[in-house]
Image 1 (cartoon, rainbow, N blue to C red):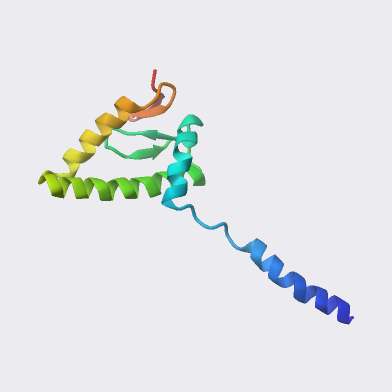
Image 2 (cartoon, helix red, strand yellow):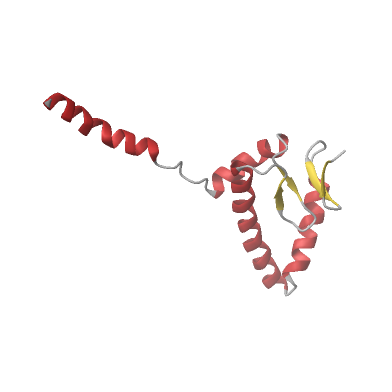
Length: 117
């Protein structure tokens, strides 16, 4: 009986650790995963300067949120430095992002995700 009790005490912390949710992705991990996510068709570029989730899944959503938050902060900083509206920075960034998107990766055109030719 004692050995069963000891076994339970040893297994309890292990079971607790297994049941914890996986730690959220950080910005560095999102940036590292971006190229592969684009190649897999999970995320794409939009004319507004931000990423969008082509496929609605947790990995794509995490990448989009983290990178868009960083982009939003950078756009605000650039807008302030240049005394222009954030919307103007977003538009310029979006235009460049669409131009730089590799063939076969997704871009949002007229409300539809399409592969760039």
